[in-house]
Length: 282
Image (spheres, rainbow, N blue to C red):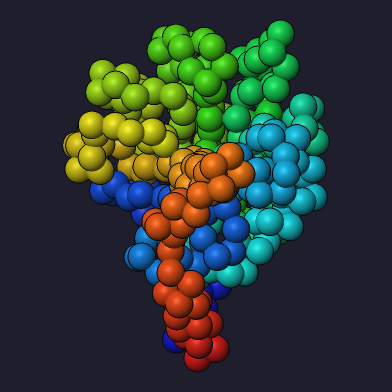
């Protein structure tokens, strides 16, 4: 079987957003991406935080070019569509957002998100008119590159200390009008909040972040009208949690007990050997 082309993956990604609900988990490197793909997930999304931690950064200040190289690696290593967590476009001015979006498209990603967070604690969100201009710039960059990359508009209100549903919905609706194909409000988590967002932006699809323990299941979320579910940095945090607990036991108590739940090296070798052989046959 030949590898799908970038255009084919982008067409598939758009089609996935037209009906039903799917989980789009977030790998942070090639190995985690290959494993998630092997489990049958039909699309993957990068995680800015998971990648940042793997490079020794906090979430946010990873240089743009490192992020672009990472996206290229994920796309090249997988056969499924990849959505880029492209933060705030790695720029403030709309024209610079457009240029960076163009560079992201060149990596082969099937979709990318642009958020309205400024990374400035004093003014954590762009004013709505500026945020809309930035979204329109991203839309123009996509359209001028063929128009087949899916654009996700993110309202970061709940993540920056402004958990106001009315403002969140107003921003999402404005981003939809500015050309976003999919809407995303990370931080909403109650059934009432989710239903309100889905209803407000319909018929545009909604991405829900569930990167924390929740009573909701995929079936529950689908019933609320959500089209896709991502987990952000939660898988990376899970891996870090096991690593940190085990390392602290070793450093503080001289105990090797933390290795009891480690994955078996033979199992990992077997998976990656088989995966490598399969890729060689493509």
